[in-house]
Length: 335
Image (tube, rainbow, N blue to C red; front, side):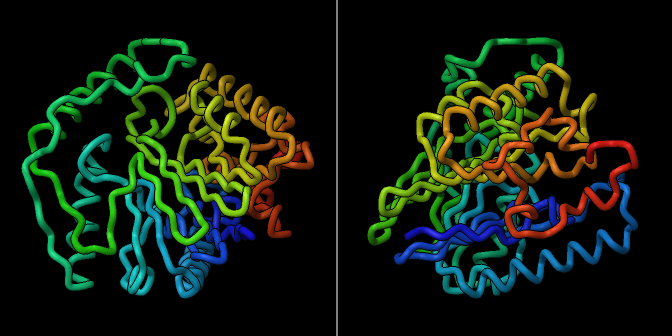
């Protein structure tokens, strides 16, 4: 038996993708964080704040049921620094030392220093264990190389980050309950947790950094939490999802509200084609397509009919609730 309970997502009115996955062996709370919707979202600030506080309340309640917690990356809509969420729990976190951008490098250290102080651990550092790091794009054979000016700048930033990983002290887990989970597999009773290698948070050399995705397996059932692939944009990530053939996919869609800024038309077209391929080739899967994509009141129109499929819905739709963005869609638009 494996049970998936979405705790919060952007379709409910605050930035989050918090999910509780339960098996007979564990109750895993994934990415227990939430942030307020972007300034440009057309809802009153007071309403957005109310939704954020509702998200925090739901996450705290879910933490009371959890035995384990996973944090896939260090963006504030994916983790909170509150002792009640982590107390007594085993914690899987993305490595703070490699394949992490500058801001998340510092946030990770702040979080681990806080965790050590909160639970009697020790904040410890050591010399870097590695000095060279493979270019992740070179390990993606299905992703077409498209190096324009923006991509070239992001690649150079990636190279600067990799020099930091090789030169600055690495953090150690603060206690035995905290593990760095990148590329690792864990067996807990009859449940298996598989964490991916670091994946781009979006397009090639994304300035937003890296994430780890997570597969939970029990009794021949699979639940895949993709974390923030923002699409997926990349063809290799699409191929991997299809090859895994999960029964449930928690899929972070593209940030269409940033079209023309963080997301360009070419990459949106790639996202749409990739999501279509996933739902076509994983016909038995339930797909919860949410997070970045539902920050846009026109998200259904932008996704060109993908939400018309019976097996694709938002977290709000899965829970039988109104999609928050639908309240603010302009008349005459498909929100």
